[in-house]
Image (cartoon, rainbow, N blue to C red):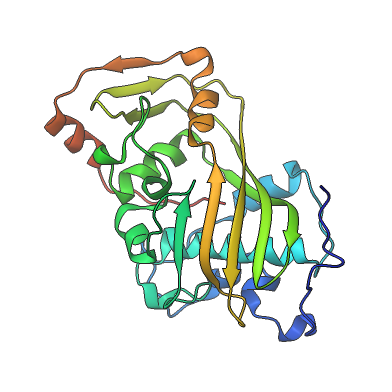
Amino acid sequence: MAAAADVHNLPAEPMASLPDYLTDPDAVLGDTQADWRYGRAPDYSKTRKMFEETKKMTHPAGSLPTLVQNLVKNWEIEASFKPTLSDWRTIDPQNYSFAINGSDPQSAAYMLQVGTYNAIISPNEYYSPEYSDFGSSHKTFKRMMPTFAWEVLEVYSGPPTVAFRWRHWGVMKNDYVGFNNKGEKVTAKAHGGLIDIQGVTVATVDDKVRLQAVRTWFDPMDVFRQIALDGAVTKDAVDKMGAQTAAAGCPFTVKHSK
């Protein structure tokens, strides 16, 4: 099915009157009064450059796919780097929830507590949120894949219920090192190839086009199948306390994301 940005409830307002998080993918990076997780707004320049060079779709400026794409990019910045929920501008805080693959809906506070990766990945043979907190989970994936771009491929319906298909991709430049559901340390050697996943999201938005109920479907294991080609990993036994301590790691600064 092709995207139908020309017929699906495009906002009637001129672009200048739309919220900036719909018209600019980096709008919330300018929120100087916000409490940023690492003391300042993150640097997305490398990921934005990769996005422009390797994206599959070029949506017209002001089209529904572009507006949706900008909204989600700004939401991801806030979910990853704004630890104070009242600083988030892309959600309706009273009615916001998210769910993955039909799971029970979770709140924004839950995502802030466990981290964006831990909120969407269930324990498996490659990775487990049980042995990774917010900081270490970001370190695990962002060290392996320094840039992880995101784009809207198709939009199937417009506000107030926005359904769209998306793509999330990057290059595995460094080894993957994480802890699995048995507490084992799992290592997959960097192959320098593309990690490319796709999914579908259906989200309701309010009259300010802020996210409310966000429901996403994708295959989390597809990430690990592409990380560990042909299942090629090493697994080292570590006692559970050791796994938790090692996963916590040391402080780090993240400068990249979608």
